[in-house]
Image 1 (tube, rainbow, N blue to C red):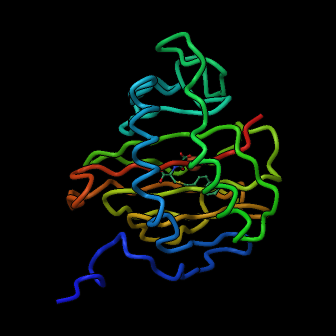
Image 2: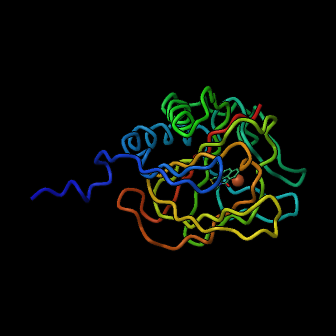
Length: 217
Ligand code: MD3
Ligand code: FE
């Protein structure tokens, strides 16, 4: 019996769905690279482990974070910012794995953003119940560069709002291997992730990992 149809590592044509004027979901785009991405991620996490960070308002984020690349995004009581050094180790963040940079560059080009060279990769780890409330990503220096996000593990419901917090938000389900590219007019749209349901993934169990490749500096 041929079970390839049910194997999420089997190559698929990347179906692409437009979710905004300059935003596209590339379904399954990262599946061929998933093993390499997860292996590189393990090495990053050995140097800079996932940790939950405090917001300026004093709340502990439900999502645990780490970073790789020249710059990493952090938050504490003093605010949100990018730093060249991991505050946990006082060492530079782990280097950007070539497999991360290549996927970011290729996905951005497939979405119409040629020449994207990420210098930062924020790693998010969601356990069941973890969520990300509506926010804008505005700590990067140059909003003309897109952001590329890679979803791995359990599915999540992504919220995609408008340029005002009160604008209605569309719901976009994201699955293992999906890649989303946001740029141009969509770069500053509010977005978030609904509390994660526990739908264990065959490879990653009760976890969702999200990589966002950015040009921060
Ligand atoms: C849309 N992460 O880390 S990825 C974040 O799934 C973040 O972990 C979510 O929002 C996650 O900041 C969503 C996608 C994402 C990243 C940046 C965006 C979506 C975006 C910037 C503008 C519009
Ligand atoms: Fe964000």
